[in-house]
Amino acid sequence: MTDAGRRRPAASTPGAIWQLVDTSSVGGIERHVATLADGLRRRGGDCVVVLYQDHGRNPWLAQLADAGLPVRILDGSVVGLYRALREARPAILHTHGYKAGILGRIAALAAGTPVVSTFHSGEDPPFPLKLYYRLDAWSSLTSRRIAVSEVIRRKIPWRSELIPNYLVPPSAPPSAPLPRRVGFVGRLSHEKAPDIFCELARRSPPGIEWHVWGDGRMRADLEARFGDVVTFHGVVTDVRPVWDSIGLLVMPSRAEGLPLAALEALSMGVPVLASRVGGVPTIVRPGETGWLIDVGDVDGALAAVADWDAMGIEAGRELRHRCWRHVVDHFSEQRHLPDILGVYERAGVAVAREPVTPAVD
Image (spheres, rainbow, N blue to C red):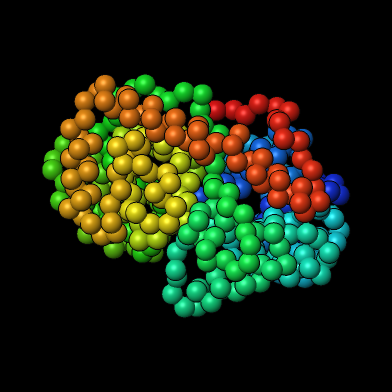
């Protein structure tokens, strides 16, 4: 629904919690926002996902509709956001991402709306994006701040809460043997290092399938150079079937915050091989949930893939259970949503701590 006229805005009663994001696709931030909004709804909270502007066809909108989450799409202007805040009078504006953070705080300050901002990105981008990231951090003085990893929290001036990404894990991990498929899930951009993933595929011994799910500016070049050893699937609107099809997630990133894809894989019993960056070491524990390597260490990654490939069926099942257990114990909604509710309470909004309706696996 859009304030620009093509769709009517979602109903929103005074006192609602708005989750503001500027997006044109589906990634970790979007899946986190959907999980948070659903958790609030199940606790009786009135929550609306608000998109700053209409970017056209966006598969995330269909996912939100399927989940029954109300959506409002604005006209892409600070004035439009200010007017929407004045009209709907939400209790809190919760921003995600630098653009939503900077512009959302300007409009909310003028409208008298309290703000909570979550900082998701652990990358150190080039100019001019670096300037926007710094402006986002320094302008957050007017909001309550949440960082999803300790590395990110150290970059934010003033005090912020450390609340990692989380999800609703299934009631039990899959018991099927780990498939002999290796996967990459994410943006095909420099910081995610899909080029290193493809180099691993090139140098890997035969018998292992290598697959990429995602899109980005590097795709055309990578597909031309590595299309004979890597299958490129493009963007998927629902990533859940991917976890059933792979036995190892490889994330050779050059920079990360706290990647939701790694948590999703682990919750489905899929081990993770990843670079030792950002908050990744809190997710991937060598010998317990996967393997860690230094950035760009192709030889170390190949050795880890060989260890994974040599794993027997029973050892694989035990690994799957440890991966799932780690998410249940450390990155579940039950553990961390109350922390976000505590931030909301300090901003003046109370939401029930226990769900009224159950989550669906």
